[in-house]
Image 1 (tube, rainbow, N blue to C red):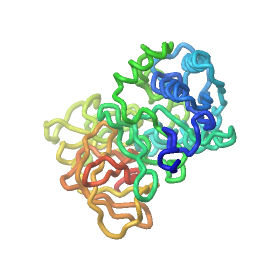
Image 2: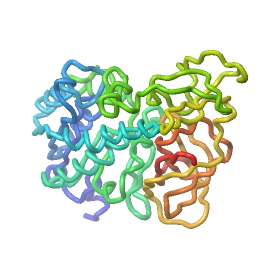
Image 3: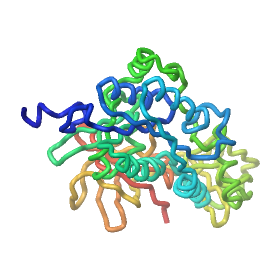
Amino acid sequence: MSRATSLNSLGIDKAPADTRVVVAMSGGVDSSVTAALLKEQGYDVVGVTLQLYDHGVAVGKTGACCAGQDIQDARQVAERLSIPHYVLDYESRFRAEVMESFADAYARGETPVPCIACNRTVKFRDLLKTARELGAEALATGHYVRRVIGEAGPELHRGADPARDQSYFLFGTTREQLEFLRFPLGDLPKRETRALAGRFDLVVADKPDSQDICFVPNGNYASVVQKLRPEAVEPGDIVDMAGSVVGRHEGIVRYTVGQRRGLALGGRDGTDNDPLYVVRLEPATRRVVVGPRSALGRDKITLYDVNWLDAPHEGRLPVQVRVRSSQSLRRAEIELTDEGAVVRFAEPEVGVSPGQACVVYDAATGSRVLGGGFIRRSP
């Protein structure tokens, strides 16, 4: 039998029964269906759930991944599927790698994306290492992205369902990690995943999707930052672009570039009465600078901490980019530099926030993730 015909569904040259796969089980419907599908196909499946923060905070909390109830749900699914299941205590590394950096970013006047940090560290670095130690030949997750074999090896592509695509959060995946990772749901729409959960009779079949950042109670991220970095919630002035004070704030952590609502502005003598937006944050002086929408436009941005999955190139490369997870793709050019990268937009981009990710896709189809980085604060 040729190698091409002997590969199993995960592209590994072994029978499924001889192929151990670790599934990252968060307790949600997506990862549970991933485990069920692989079990049905005959793989040697091992479920692993990460305990990422204190159970005292997690118990009874709904609408977020990795909480106490979610661990119980993952355990019940594993029992239903008759697969081994382990809960790993990653609390200390999660706090150091994700929560502390989250708070630091807000204190710097940035808007971080903790799910990206989590995927790059405790999940696709630490958990992947643990999967290898367990004798696995792949780590599978419930992410809606696709792993496609190209001419130079595995490529990362957007999920087939545009409404569920999670490629923005996975741009930091390295080539080496992509060799080991698998995403069985990448070609499915969410409704089909729900239907499969019902067919497998999983306890999580009707469980709502996660909405909040897992360690942020009720979406109140300012309270989390206040505990970790009290200086980030010290009050200060809201000023217009000429430096005139137009209001007060209770901490720059409560604002992000492009924000319009919740500014609580007072009198605006000498200030244009058109709607005002947050133009930039100045943590050193604790000032929130506001201005008209026209002041938000950016022709180019610089990126740091760049992860590049495509072949190296010189000069400007036509691409499509996304600077927010929910945004449609934008035409641009990227130029890699020693310090990171420069992205030039085809049309000015509004509301670019330092600390957010800029994810880069191929120019032709916008399907393949070429890489990305984090948006640097303007001088």
